[in-house]
Image (cartoon, rainbow, N blue to C red; front, top):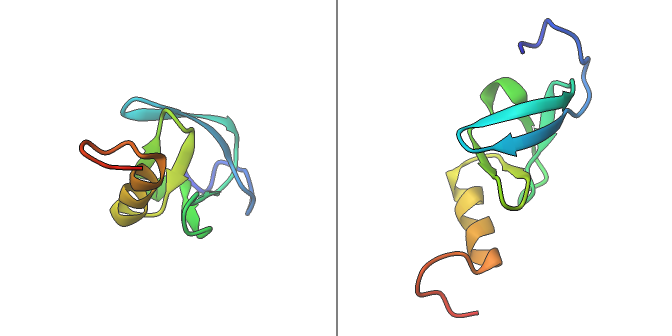
Length: 76
């Protein structure tokens, strides 16, 4: 979906899958679970299938993994 297919300037609802995602409700952006910053759907590259949340960049994704205790050899 591109920004000209509707959805206006509102948040999309997305189901995050392995290596893909499914748009449940059209929109132009999702919100990063770590930073709270908007991420354009067309530019979405980082998300968690397990937690069903999006991230603005790799650093935010890594921070989410740390907070979840999902990294090897990580002590909670």
